[in-house]
Length: 168
Picture 1 (cartoon, one colour):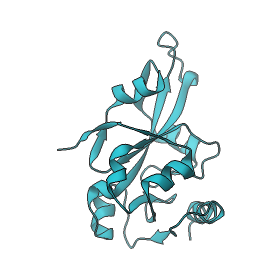
Picture 2 (tube, one colour):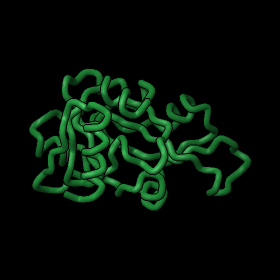
Picture 3 (cartoon, rainbow, N blue to C red):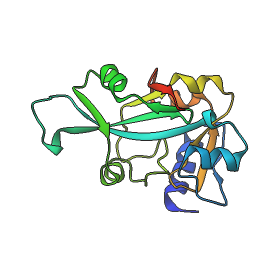
């Protein structure tokens, strides 16, 4: 088991999560890949997307970017304008792979909702509440775990929010 996956599995157990980590035979870097391997709807995949928020539009230094985790349904694209408004930020942009790794310790395509060096401010897509079981990444592109909307909010301290639109 990859060290990131082991760390996520231990955190899930320590926090009384209902599901356990499942390693997939193939990479699940996208919601479509994960849904196909799990045999579920794409909307039941909780994408862990890291964004960079800037709170002072006049200060364009990279040092003033703050990480934000958005757990969104695989059926949605994140509306960065909505996310900025929810956070009272001047701007929210997609983070670079380096920024993601620095703030989560995990690679894009495998970012878990938990297990980061420091807790990240988190928004949880309300759309995920439609599914009894939601699947989230477990620290590596080949690992996921089953959970629920309510449990995701509890595990992450995340705030339920309307973060996007259905993708076409």
